[in-house]
Length: 429
Image (tube, rainbow, N blue to C red; front, side, top):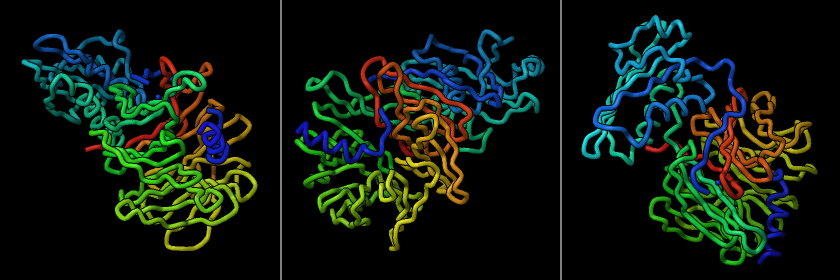
């Protein structure tokens, strides 16, 4: 089995650079100098101290987006809890453009959260809402507040209430164990959904956020599984001879694209989930893997070495041949569409090593976003503002993230073990 795993890695991970456990913590690695100043005042509390500092969660969310620069608490002149208590001149003196205030009432396990978003220069209220939650839902409530504030100011739907999936490994050699986790987008509230003594790879979310497709070696060879996140129920989808890899859900949730080598070299196939019927999209002597769907579901991109090195190609499902998309440099792999379908995010090898990059599909212009030199496995937030990826720190795999414009980045280091294969969920209802 180990020999098969080595063969599979040599073929499918040919296009990957060198190089996620319990809760992750966030380190800002590069800030955005043009981020908008905002103050998130600690929420007043009635009925005792809460287990979660909601205002701090909101401030952390907004800072992590790269769009905002929250004011440090020790720099605040006052701590108003409602818009009526705000003295706008105090906050104008601090060059703060927006202000978030709130009050939390806690009684018998139920929490009521009132918050307001104030425009400091306009001296007006932009947003106000009352939320109810129980103690276990406090972080979710804070993420919802962040989503609303982000959308109100930027016009872009917030993605703080989404989730990420990732794979961790611990141990050495035959003693290595592997785990598949899901967590909030900030790395907290992690939940292990699978553990195995054999490798787990390539998790991908269904478009409704309820399932994960992934590759597991538990049967002695790579096989693709689909698992319900909430219940843990799962089914094996493919276990053909050779490679079964890189599952990718279609936007309508009815199909899985994948790379299979059952007929020779790895090629791209599409499976109808209901009928299990397979359609072969590519047929060449090259290695073709890492499929990803266009947002409209009418085409796929994938990585192929048909030009002599890994490059990204597009294939329309209605027919026609392969169209090469990447021409900058001799290594471009693991392409993923942005949600608008106008750009792709990928791993590009340039003078600074393996970096997350963005390429505009109309102009072909490619821009490097990350700085690690060892980036792999990019996954795009559903609102297109952020890309999460795997990288290395101190010899361990960790997760990094960078804004889609490259202006800000952060890292989510693991306390132990390697963290790899991140996948960002769609928007969740």
